[in-house]
Length: 392
Ligand code: MN
Image (tube, rainbow, N blue to C red; front, side, top):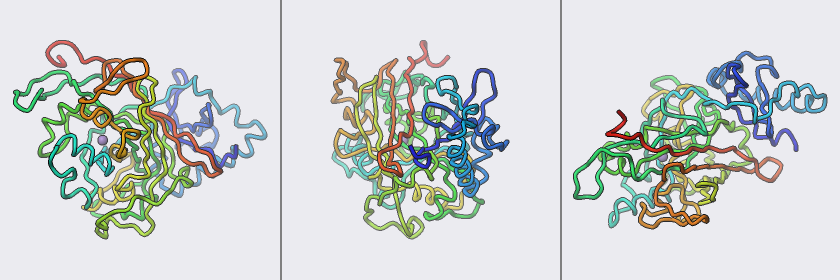
């Protein structure tokens, strides 16, 4: 395989009791970057110091890495800096600064509108004019494999009943990508759609854990709050945008045309295909390419009021979905809010997630030399709610 077609995802790993440091996945091994490139910026337990250096430094590191792979692969020099991935522990790759989540799939927004507000317009009047989003909770972003405890919260069992405080009975996930800001911006300035690649380092796979019963009661009029803030899981590997050059595609058409501050000169999306598995059963295959609002428009929107970006900012794209069940990116859509449970091959049925369920999302993108590159995975197991009257 040509090294130029390696995805070269960046992450943070440790071996035994050693302190965590930056590595790059090469097949089933992890390359110790500080040792390979001799740069102390990689001898750090998060990617943030490297990300803060900006796009010229990201490109230079990639070029140095490809050079080392080209020569070291022949001479064997790299061998001593490669660790089998089974021998390492992978950590949260970034110190998350702010976390924002969008709602940018026309398919998902339409499905959700039909499910939650039957008989009304599926989309709110603002939806086609700006990428709708909300501020999430940075401190509860966790890495792949971290168990997620079923949250308690306040909700109603039906429209007429009084609210009560209980473990969520409608625990769900949303299949998303997350984009990681490397280079920040100054307060009071804006970042344009065309400046996306000057600020965003790469992408992660993201599971937006969502308690639909808590969400339905709390979200009017300010949006999701405790129904989302208990956990968000990201993949341990950040795929640099430079690795996705062959995955760029023309984005979905937008009608009406967005206002000028949300318009770029050469808009693009990414042909990233995802697979959602529940307990090892493939349940859907969402595709990112059809997202209505692009990651570049989301970034521009976030700064369009002058709010600054910081290294480590993470933004979720919103649930990636489709018009039919083959690509639904949430169990709310797959089971139509639990009313139409899905049958699993082992005979189990599911409305929403049960305790001990394991959700895994993986993804691929086109490789420069044809074929597809694997973008890793993100997963989580549901732990039962704490017993007793609340979290205690
Ligand atoms: Mn979401």
